[in-house]
Length: 249
Image 1 (cartoon, helix red, strand yellow):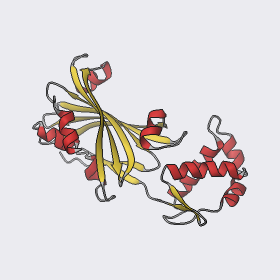
Image 2 (image 1 turned 90 degrees about the horizontal axis):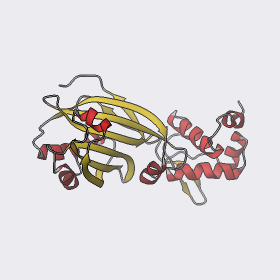
Image 3 (image 1 turned 135 degrees about the horizontal axis):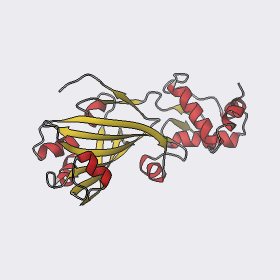
Image 4 (image 1 turned 90 degrees about the vertical axis):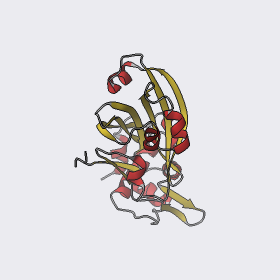
């Protein structure tokens, strides 16, 4: 198959981006293993029937996104051929899900505000539109690399200090516990995918044209009262999402 012709049919996406995605797909499919050397630029240029500058742009994108790394005089190597797996079930805990897959999982509060609930937030939290909610924006790192960013809303009357408690603990679970929520459950999750926007590119250290996975989720307490609505964005080349249908409640 002529990969150049296949690539050119994808209108609106730069050729270097399509080559980067094709190489990433080969890595995910197991064609390349962690630590293995990629073919030289000249060989990749021949495979894709493009010039070396286009291949170089694709490799540079993969380096920035942490998929590969380059060593002067030696070549380009696979950094991590295996994606992290985020398990979504009735008790969905981000750090808990990834703890056995990484050395460190950390969260950082990057923005917070209290204001009236939008129509969307009010519906998801079963509130009157305009009711006060606390909004927190967070960024999660796995082994020092940004993996996801999230916007979450909580009823302000019940969780006035949620942002303060999150900043102290870097954990939604611990922040909810500080508000006397002993346990909570995932009520709904909607998953989709899209191209990264400018905010994604900046926060997750991605390159233009990268794909991100997004989730919209609602958590409820033990009485099935909504306590958290969140929109989360994950770097698709670093993360896969797995749904656990086993009921724990």
